[in-house]
Image 1 (cartoon, rainbow, N blue to C red):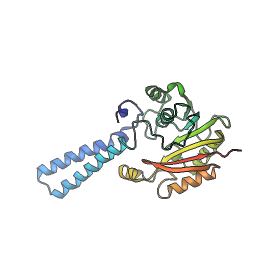
Image 2: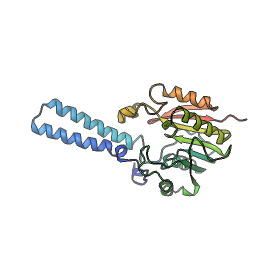
Image 3: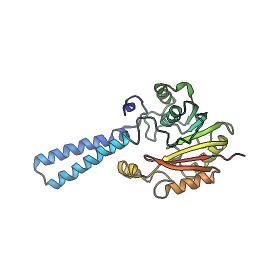
Length: 255
């Protein structure tokens, strides 16, 4: 948990502090209602909402790891421990650091448009490099600006591709293009680890309005993502989950 104080992924305050602020408001309201002698049921309601907000904060900063590098969800990804990896939609670096820390003989090329939005306040290459420097892995990181729907790389450039909470921000055509580009830049036999927002109980509890995120979100999301990856020409190896994430491990078939 102390890693949350080391890194600066710059997720905006509604994501990182929103639950805590809501909890403080409802705790104060509960105390005021109790002291003022209001009907007890009102204090009970605000007290329950305060508990929900505190639990949501624990989920955001615990299992969801908003201010820490992500955990690699499967040991089968890049099991050799070495290779050239593309992080498609790298943002401020949580997924790039996930690979660099878990696979110390790998290198990562982080690709992003580095635009404002998607919850990151100051999304810049410098922020990503700073987080890599804090983790001690900057020497194995390359940062490039580009669109995951039209990647600036030659065919077969990478041994593996990881993409976390990026492709699922796109519409159906964007998903199709980004998966096609991912297949193109992978060498035959290369691996794809795709992680997208999953409407599991973590998501539904902490962010009930966010559970149907994206065109491929909501009910039936695993089946839709399985079909999209399969139609893009990948062979699915494993489908699993991590807190708030659906994880698909697939390979580009050997020619």
